[in-house]
Amino acid sequence: MISLQRLQRWLSRRGTLVLFLLLAIVVWALPGWFEKKTPTITHTLALSTIPAETIWLNQEVFTKTIYNDNGVMYAMPVSRENIAAIDINNGNVIWKADLPLERGGGARGLLALSDKVFVITSMFIDAYEASTGNLKWSTQLGKGHVRVLAQIESDLVRIYYGDNIIEVGQETGAIIRTYPANNVKWKIGNLSLAASPSNYLIAFNNQNDEPLWKNDLPFFIGEELEPIDVGNGELIVGFVDGICKLKLMNGTYVWCHPEINIADTAVDIPSQRVFAMTNDLEIFIIDLQTGDMIGQSRFLSSAPMTNERSVIASLEFGDGVLVVSFNDSGQTFGIKLK
Image (cartoon, rainbow, N blue to C red; front, side, top):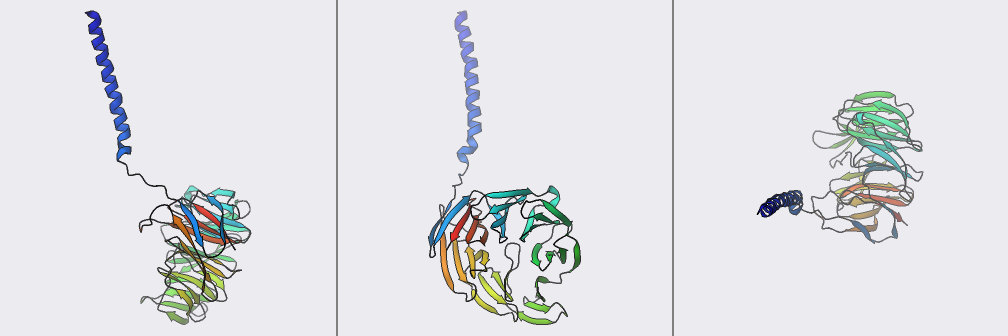
């Protein structure tokens, strides 16, 4: 009789333990049962009207890229916490430099010369040695929380910093001058391009502020789509639904492709080609001089395209290699074009 009671108590305790373990397993697994599984997205270069070959593929997304004509591309990842020098012909990382935490929320702009790389954040501009990634100098621009754009011109770096324009010397980082932007969106040579209250684009002479021309079709200027200087007094400019070549002398558009809903652009001056990428995974290749469409490539996606997906992260070209980085798949392709 005693043995039977002990057995019943043992089974009772063991049953409680088993029940507790089962409940713990259910609580642990329950979120996964109801969690909506996100399909893995991949892209593949599928079609091209010109010879094209994927020569490398990295599983990292770069939001900004810049090529410096030495076979090296400088890239900023999605985190914007560092920059990397990448061999554009094989995708290998040459060096990587972490950005200090006090830089104010990560990099906003990336510029490169043959010997220096400039990283512009919401608070600082830093210059790194192009070959090693060593920091050369650092200059504070402000306290952040402003719109930031930057360009290289002559021996300075020009930063459009909120309502001001700051010009910094390339060699030392010394601030040469700071002045109000007064609606100026971009400066090049002796011209300032400004937006008027009536939504015109107006060009002024920098020497005497004399208005030279106006255009009622202003192009977009932002961190993700800046004008590209292609020489001969011309710019490649982007719109929400198109791409054009602008002649600075008189403000006319030499050619336009309004049918291309561009996500990013790249230009190769030696081959006189413009590359325009859309969020529909198409790359249009345009003759820089004539505007003729001379080629087209297309990626295929493993998942249906939707308007909610942020697809294109960046586009860059150098040394015959087109670099395409995708937000949604986490892939960066190096594509050799003939």
